[in-house]
Length: 253
Ligand code: PEP
Image (tube, rainbow, N blue to C red; front, side, top):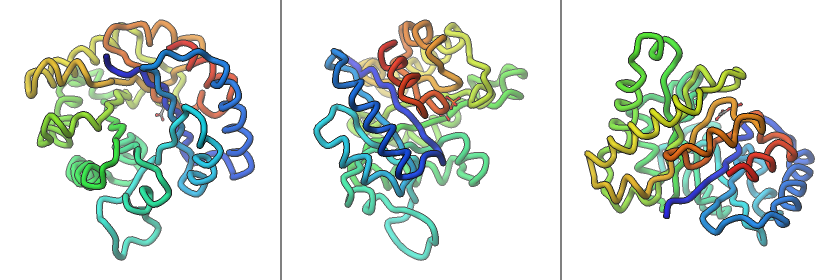
């Protein structure tokens, strides 16, 4: 049975002090929830707060992920963080391909493919993000764009490697804009992605892959989006920054 996941991407938010407060609040609330055993909760604080967050969550069901990592193992890459460094602080999950990394830091298909390979070589799990911009959707190119992003970064992997991948469809026009894809638009794209994977691999591989939706998911719209057959949870930005909303999203899964 594929996993249901609610993952919070904190982006460049929360000081150490704020991290401690938010982590403690979420931990306390989640402890009282009777979550299904196939449900996973993940938070991705900024690099400098990862260690503190994982220490605070040591005895909890909540996992901690990094928001990014460099594709090289080590070297002269000022300001960057490697997979080995993350593993060294017991972080084994990383978000790759977020649209903000693609847009503001020039991460293209080639770089992302290299990041995927480095993460897998280091036995990490990956939440791989992709999605079309508004212009693509207006032109009716959204399926083509998403197909190309997934193929370029992931279709060289073998079936076994796919066990370490979670996909996150995040239409760029819905990220942080307050505009959400309709549950039907999300379902349509997720079903398309699952079919793509079934064609390239097998239906067993496709059925096992968790596909998250991301883009202005909030307590008011989460239940309907998460209820769709091929939507296995969400990657949450804004609403993961306060415990009330985030916990409400976890309850919606
Ligand atoms: C995100 O950045 O992954 C995201 C989905 O952001 P928001 O929920 O704020 O739209």
